[in-house]
Length: 571
Figure 1 (cartoon, helix red, strand yellow):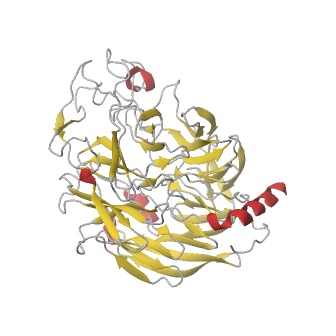
Figure 2 (cartoon, rainbow, N blue to C red):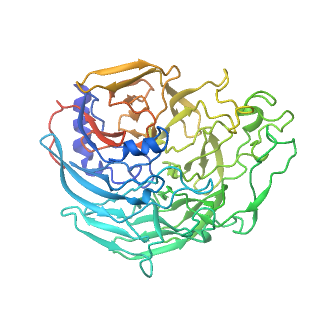
Figure 3 (cartoon, rainbow, N blue to C red):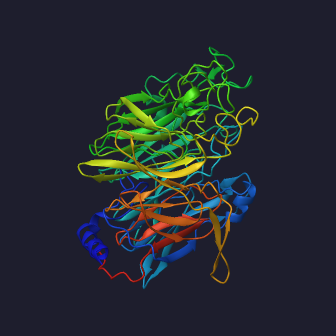
């Protein structure tokens, strides 16, 4: 009863600020809601937004290699992607993307309108480069409009009342070879920012990409853009030689002082799914990478009018490779005997934060103005690193997990905490794919296991919640649930952006098909089984102004809450 009353008080006081209008909920991407989530007692709604699930799973060998938007909410309206068109193996551009407005009416999500977008994702990977996961289509919500990514680097402004759309084009003409890439983001001033890129039409990832932009659309409709090639000040030129990786003579490095080969870097551009983030003062933070070398990546700060402030490299930041996060030199999975402690064995240099095109990591701005970014690193079992930078670009340190994650930030006690997934993957190999030198299994000292971890601002562990469920379950046609005990190491956390409510409760979904509520002390408060989710996509969660939780499972949008909760007036 006390929790229900608290939820009603918070809802009434903060309803006007409780919408979830964009990726990460706010311009800082904190994933933090000012309301208390409802109890996880019932599935309130369930509908399919990706009708191509079976074909996608078949093509990828059982894994859903796609990214999906966070459900956007305002009052009783929920805006979510709906895919249509035709699914074609190895060509995701034959699909179509739409946004549906559904409204809670008498306990049901009732469709109000559907708005088609002519947006297409950038082409799929080629030659081992580019995105292997279907890129994210992600709109943004304002009081009057929902903005959709569209074709030719344009966006659509859709009237929330009618679903009618108008196009906004920031370029001199309509050019279908320009792609909107990554989520649209609303700045503190209410302007729309997004990334656009123009890959080579024949070889999009193995040829250079000299054209990519950060675009701003003001509330007035005025547009501006700046080229990414001018943003990463200090980055190597497109034709400059950049260090690549060893390809032969495992275990790596081939000798203690081996020098890896070099190749042209390519032009700086955004990662495929990245999006800008904003400080409270309007500063814009973006990440970029070299077209041919993801290990030459940078964070850049700009003013709201797109003027450059500073750039910081993510290269040569880690000293936790050989003999540290890896097994001892000479042991299975370890570096070559005699390798220098701490280096990345793949190039024999200090580890570099990588902007991976199959990741949805974006910058996150903390309450103290510092910036976090989840970068990819291969050498620590593909776990990546969560990197930390000051508001002026100084590197402050890292935590050894950052793959495809955007931690939620919960402000409390004049400070804050970050909540992130931390998957200690099995079957990946430590730093290479050859089982003779990088066995699939992990060591006894660092076994396969899966956590939700809460970190302090200085990236020290405050608590960890471990996945201990070992059973794969599935709903049967008669509504019963059948289970088999087949996951002795637990299940992955299949999230890229958790949600945290006003009480500090974190909501996350696992690959066991369960939605969990973890309280502010790291204890399980509640859970609810959705359905089997093996090979699930990493997906974001959101919370609406009434405390309903929106999660995703196997191409379904699922709303969870309490059916007996007292009715509250619409804000």
